[in-house]
Image 1 (cartoon, helix red, strand yellow):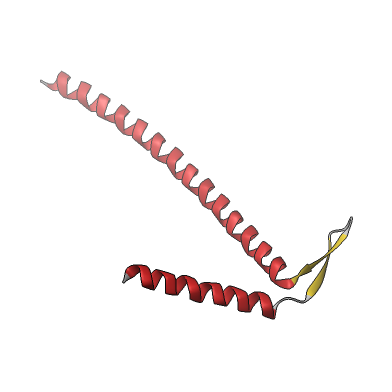
Image 2 (image 1 turned 180 degrees about the vertical axis):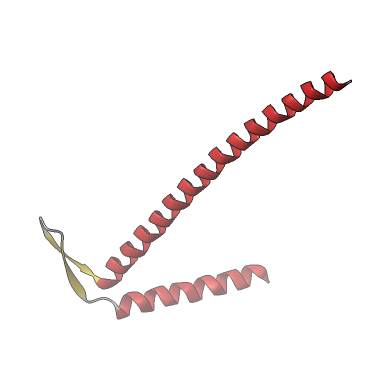
Length: 93
């Protein structure tokens, strides 16, 4: 049953992509300063979508790396404080 639903969703998605491509098949001119290219609008929109997804992915990776760096700093600080706490506990006894 799940396999059938998966295939149905895939088929609907494929039909939507085909309709999108058909409706946006007209050529548009893109001027890139040095040269000019003619692409179907659907291709241009999909390229823009892909570039946006890649940019979002890159920013997400940068944020994750920043969080990991902060976590490692806090972990080191925690270990240092636990070491100092252990030393202080030994001197009190």
